[in-house]
Amino acid sequence: MTGLTVLHVVPDLRRQAGGIAATVPALAEALRAEGIDSRFLTLAHDADFSGRAQTICAALGNGRHPAQLKRMVAEALSGLPSGAVLHSHGLWGMLNHAALTSAWRAGQPRVISIHGMLLPWARHHKKLRKDVAWALYQRRDLLRADRLHVTSHEERSIVAQTVGAAAVSTIPFGVDLPAVVPPLAGEGATLLFIGRLHPVKNLEALVRAFVEVAPKGWKLRLAGPDEGGHRATLEALVQTLGAAGCVSFAGPIYGVEKTRELATASALVLPSFSENFGAVVAEALAMERPVIASCGTPWQAVEEARCGWWVPPDRESIGRAIADLVQKSPETLAEMGARGRDLVTSAYSWDRVATDMAQLYTGIVGAPRRAPEE
Image (cartoon, rainbow, N blue to C red):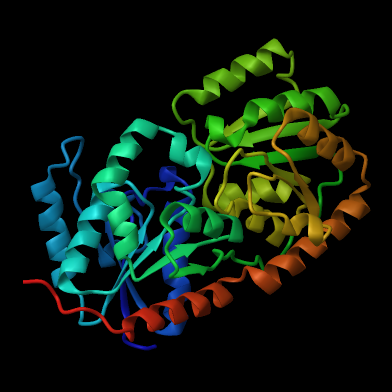
């Protein structure tokens, strides 16, 4: 595999952008062990982004003119070696569309990672705008791709129903396994949420369920960036419920801060209406923390492996899971956490993910391809 280059197209690589911005650089790092060189094409990244030397970035601001995008894409593609793969992450963005179109015209192999953007909740968010994009270019881009990549069987089913494409690979994203796992805190108990503060995360139901069932001594911690002013809605709800003493907000957390929050938590909760993967679940399991995940996430495995709960995303079901969690002893929670780490080790290590993704790239690079357009 040595010598293959992959250009990852990600509109926003800033930490505040959330899941894709964290996942793609981690994937690129894991691919190095497979001899794959990764480069990035983006509209924005943090000043300390580790891959900035391999990145083409244009700060186009609000006026993203098609001519500018075409120039940036042309620059990125012209610098790629022969046989390089274009890997587009996410849907709807004009940067992704411009890159896929240029690569298609040049006859370059193309992969599109869906990143949950065809799941029902996501598809209906800003539906009118997406319907227009679907008719103009998005469906065509998907059908032209050499391979579509999804992270769960549920997402694969949605893609098959929506696009009817046969060339779909299911490969979950990975997680780093910490060398040292901190024990559960001896005093106090915290149920932790990490993610965007956004209505899709179903946090109002979580807050109500927690306040209803959690005993004295338990805390709910909501960590993540505010999106669209949803934090103010949640803070108002906490005040209305008189729960300021047991529900707190951590704001955005990354790197060491994120690790510290997981280390001090007793369990993680992800009650979303819709998630294509939910990497934070794997991160919590790797830290040997049990997880409450909604059926809107693809994490049925936590229930099967007896390291957590997989429940419908309604207040009553979330409440029952919390009530079950809080009555368990620290020893039982530690046993559940150990089973969670075993699950991650066997199925979600970056080594395994990189090997599977490298095989995906190899398969499309070697496949017959039509002659480039003039």
